[in-house]
Length: 230
Image (cartoon, rainbow, N blue to C red; front, side, top):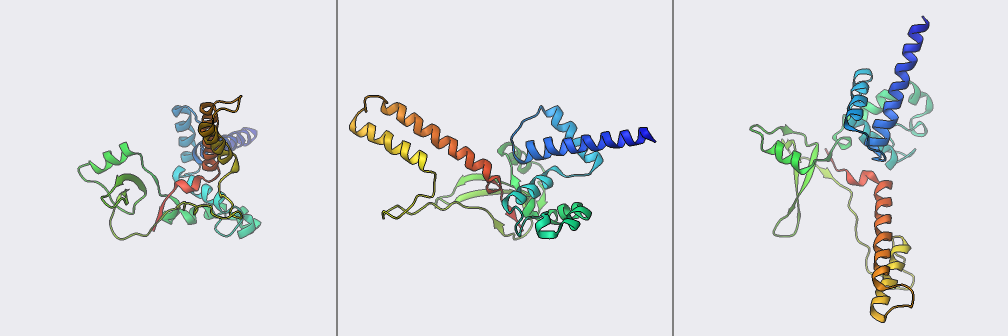
């Protein structure tokens, strides 16, 4: 009896560890990168013990971060109630996965080319997208795979540029630090050195600050990199 208990505890611990490290930290948030062998072993363990689909789990978790504890959060105890979360947690994960909104993802160019060049490319509900340049009008071209077998509504997150600032009361929607560094570097280039910092150094400081804020923003909103189709 004790052996059964120990084996059960060990399997449970391995499953929780795989969910935390593989599904959560590596696949959902990209905060760590394991050796492919380690990743495949954790993925295999989860498939054997829980039947979890990696792509679906990641999509549901990212949607959770998009609307944490608000309507739209697929598994929030604040929305569904703690009892429902405890007794029907798996159903709360599975229900949204039946909708393509939660599983569409970016397809690498090499994979898209391989799929499209197959003798019999797959047709059906699209799960992958890839940018394919622009047309003569300057509109973005996008490939979908599987090749759509009908008409689908495709929804994406867009970032609309802020209108030019014209009044003293206008406020920029981006962090102030890169703007200040950029203005300072431009002033040095136009009016000469300030006796301490060269304009080239100031521009490098501006670029470094801008890159840092872009990376921070991308990590805060990973769902903006995902498209959905229905």
